[in-house]
Length: 374
Image (cartoon, rainbow, N blue to C red; front, side, top):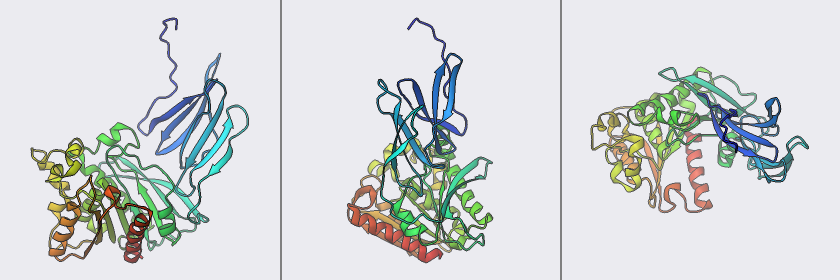
């Protein structure tokens, strides 16, 4: 207020850490850092000797969490919320410098998480960049390469794959003995804008190399082998699946490719496609020279061995045209490949119009994968 501009640095990003948020209370500041794809909460307190930083307890390790002031003008009371792959969302209430956070409410559990654990790993991609990934498996998992494993990813539009509770994965995969893996490949926002920009346009190949590196590492660590490894992705993640199919078919035993982009030569002429040219490029220009390398529809070939694939789409998808999945399945069937196509007649880009349809689509996908990679 006096015109001085002497600031104290309370947070500074690094290559693996970004600001997830902050919330001032009456006398302190709650700082939320996204550090190596997990939220870490801290309390910052001002004194005559400067700022003191302490960990805010209560959030589970390897989780998505947030904390914020109840009334920043009146007290240091705060709410704490969070979840991870094994724990549903919960809400806690506490006072900074006073009573520890007390659980007020938690969401329902939909599967038995006893005996399961979350671990985090990393692997070097083709260019040496370290790619982190989460693994959810039984604590007594045998490292003999026979575990049915599902690898999931997205890798686009600066969307981060954070650890959150997924009832379908738990009930349909984890409870039945499967291993679940989420890859934090480039193209997402896990480490800020640079992580996203590292896989744009002519650099798109990097997110596919990252995902393939994770698949290879799961085999190297003896979690699974290609015949026991399934993979799943939708939308931009469907394009990821299309490229796993055409570029790395020997690394997977089965693929679920949901509401996918696949024909990158015409994607910008269909529905919302033109709005994604900053992500992928414009195929009507010289961009096609690099785009054709990740256009799965153009790259699928007769006489090549591919893992069995299930394509799913929706007639009413108003974002990614169902023509992508239809054309890809038709072309592969014509070439003699063993693929399946399921098209729901309603539901938009989510592929389902209500919970009953969503449950059916999920059961279809997980049943297909279990049958293929058991």
